[in-house]
Length: 169
Image 1 (cartoon, helix red, strand yellow):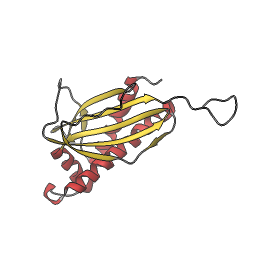
Image 2: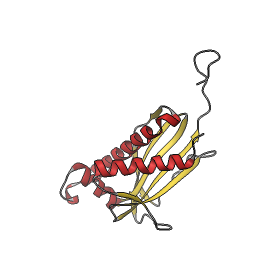
Image 3: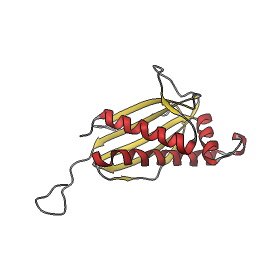
Image 4: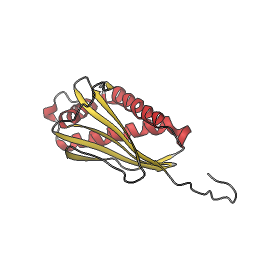
């Protein structure tokens, strides 16, 4: 079983890499006790399964999501971007962070199968994986201007027997 600290570090480091290299925004863990996401929010989500199963989430307010889309698409003004493009950008960021996270944990958890990312819009968004799941929540500051959340809901998968008798995966 992999330690929560290792998972949390891989999540934060993966998100930092993606935000710095693909979104051109800095992302740092928040030092505030309880920063909150105000107003309408977008929650990017992607599921995974393998020796570890669960979902990875990125949540921020609508203005932050719009800034992410503007930076990713190289557009000079937020006025030139629509809601569909903003949602697509959030899906892509979530997918890229999952790819980085998966890469950082490959030796510890093996291969993970990943779903197609999705985005939910609303207010005071919460996520859960149900009974027996663990949650890692990292509050972050994005571009020193926005508050966001990185979260990982997970549980160890039941051991799968291999195809060969006497050998377990």
